[in-house]
Amino acid sequence: MPDPAASRVSKTRSRFRSTTEAEDVVPTKGVASWRREFFEALDLVQSEIKRHFDQSGMESASRREETLLAAAKASVGTEEDLRSLQLPGNIDVSGLHMQMRMLGDLTKDEDFCTVHELAVYMSSRHMQTRGLFKYVENLIQLCLSMPISMASSERSFSALRRLKTWLRNTVTQKRLTHLALLHIQQEILDSLDIHVLMREFISTTPERKTTFGVL
View 1 (cartoon, helix red, strand yellow):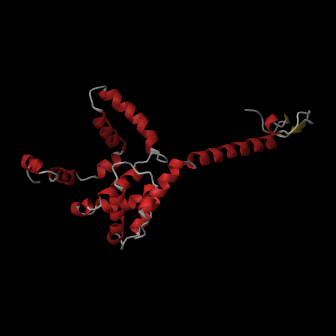
View 2 (tube, helix red, strand yellow; view 1 turned 30 degrees about the vertical axis):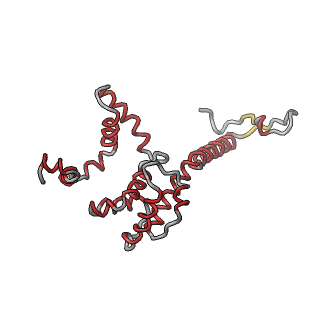
View 3 (cartoon, helix red, strand yellow; view 1 turned 180 degrees about the horizontal axis):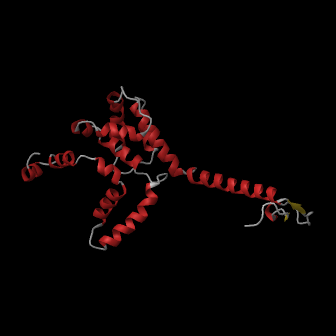
């Protein structure tokens, strides 16, 4: 690395000049040159951050979260507002609009700041209550699984490579996806009660109750 105290010749870059005539060459002290390099790097970082977050996908994700949190506070827009959120096909807009109008009554005593807090609250409700908010839960899952600004999406690639090396081609894509989620979210997995999950799995259909009994 060059000595920052050493003098050096500084020239204006051609793209910043409005003329092709030769310029006066002025020697610049090392500290001044490093200051210029620092601010150039700072401008580059700022522009890259803005480019990453200032895009249509990020705006759509932000609007979905705002819509959910507003509905939890009994503030629901029109169906056309929901259609503009570019929701996937498994979410019926009319059904979602009706469930959002009901959500405000369920959460009137709560104050949510994030979608994660709303997700924790909904997961603690009774299964019959959660069944009334199917599309709301689908939208919550969509918001929590968007990889736009999540570091876990970066970790998923290395985790997926390890899983594919271990499993090779002996597993279906669906099972590989489920195993990848379990591997990446190990902290959440360790906090779950396996007995509660077993009871929920068995109670889904009468056939499972007959096969596994009641826990």
